[in-house]
Length: 475
Image (cartoon, rainbow, N blue to C red):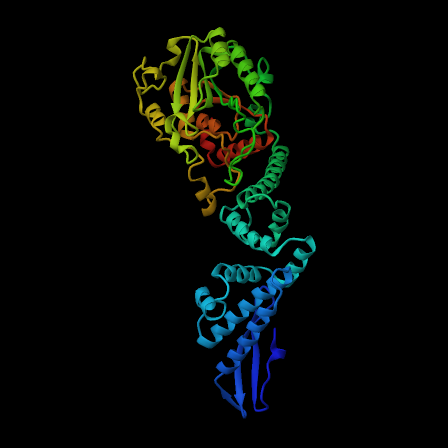
C-alpha cells in the first residue's frame, strides 16, 4: 500500500490490513482493524495516521507529469476508501474535498479521481508509450461515455480505446473528436453491412425480388429494365442541388444516421436531374408523373424547371414538407427544416387522385385531403426525430437509417394518390427502401435502383426482413 513505510507504530499497537477485493486499477480495498496489547481497538487512529501520510505524499508528488497525476488520483481514491472505512458510508466528493483537499478546486479533485479510477496499471503503461497526456485520458472518459450512450460504441468499450484518437486530434473540440470516432466506427459498420448483404445475396440467388432490386445508376436502366410507357410514378429523390456545397460533407456523423450518397457535387447532381427529366417522358405511362424531391429554403433550380417544361411537363406543381427537424427549426417552413417537392405531369388529369375511396377528379393541386395537409403543416415527422432515443433504447442500431430517408407515410401517401393497384413505381435513388415497403403494402409493382453500396445494403436488409416477416405482402 502507498506510504505505509512512512508510518511509525508502537510495539504494542499493530494495525492489521486484510484485502477484501481488488478493483479495476489493482488497488486493494481494505478492511482495517487494530490491536492494542492483543485486544482489538478502534482503528480510527490508524486511519487518521494513514490519511495524513497519504496527504503528505499527495503534496510531494510532481504536479504535471503523467505518472504523478495518476498517483494523485490513486491517493484520492485511497483516502476515499479510508473515509468509508471510518464512517461506514461512501463519502460524497464535496465532503472528501472539504475535509482534505480544499487547497485544490473541486473540479481538479474530480478530474484526478475519475481518471485514476478508469484506467488499470497496464492501460496506463500502454497509454504512456503513445505520448498521450493525463488530460487526454480524462477527455477519453467523457467521450467514451457519450458515444456509448448513443450506441456508437459497445458498452464494454474502455476509455483507453479512444485515447489515441484524442491524442491525434489535439486542436479539435471534443465534439469534433466524437464525430471523428463515430465516423470511424460507422465506416467499419458499413463495411460489415456490405459484406452481410453480399453473402446473403450469394446464399439465395433465386429470390424473386432480387431481379428488381438493383445496384445500378438509374440512367443505365432506361431502355433495358425500364421499358417505354410503363412507369406510373417515377419517385425521384436524388442528391439535392446545393449551390453552396450543402451536405457534400458529413455534418451529423455523431447522430447515428447514415449520410452516404453519390453525385453530391452540384454539377453531378444537376446532370442527374436534367438527364432523368429529359428522358422520362418516353418511359412514363399515359398518366405517369414524376415526384421530384429537393432542398427546402431555396428557389427551384431554373435549369431544372426549364428542362421540365421543355420535356413536355406542362404542370410543374410545387409542394412543401414542413418536417420541422431539430436542425434549422428556427426557420420553420422556409429553411433547412423543410423539403421541396415538384410534381411533374404532362396534363392536368394526371394529378387526379386515384384513391378509389375519394371522388374521381379531386386533384392534389386542391390540397383536398388530410395527407397533403399533414405533410405541409409539419405533422409528419422526419425519421431523424427521435432516432437517437431509439438507438439508446436498443430499438435501432446506428446507421440503420439514412438522413435522406423519407417517412413511410409520405411514400405511401403519394403512391395512394397518384397510382392504382398494380401500377409500377420506380424508385430511382432508392436509398433505404422505404418506397418498396409502401408499394408492397399498397399492392403496387416496383423497381428499386441505387448506386451507393452502403445505402443499397441498408435497403436490401430492410426489404429482406420485410418480405420474410410479412409473406402475405408478396403477391
